[in-house]
Length: 201
Image (cartoon, rainbow, N blue to C red; front, side, top):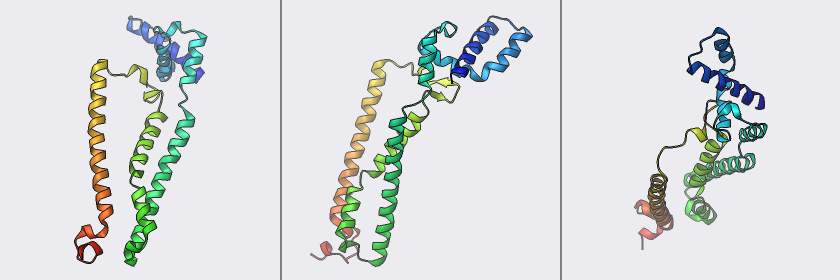
């Protein structure tokens, strides 16, 4: 990526000349050649406000930024996939037990279902991290770096949004866990079919 960053520096310098009114054929031809790497040049703005003044150290830092956190992505991806397979296995086992009409005689399956409650959340969160962390440092791939696409909201506005969202989703989580645990404890009797133990007491 170092070559593309250096080409991006050239593209940035050429773009500045074009904005200043230079429309020479040589400049247009050179910009046409380098413009695909302009986004890589913009990675340098994190270290040098004027891209063309970036030092070798700035370039090396920008090169390092082009690779996301591989270790975190490695484990997050595997946690996501493992959660998905565990949910699929639970679905298959539960379908088999219901088809055999003996789900209530399999306490291990009922415990599996109970302990699997957080699996959808784990899969969603790790999947989100894989998607968002894996595309770093880009908001728009190879065009717009994330550090240039940050919100213009104030710090207070951002914190207010985060707190409101966290409170809302925490409330949803509490309600979901309460309902799921409640009906898991009731078991099939919550269906009110008249066939199960707790309905006959």
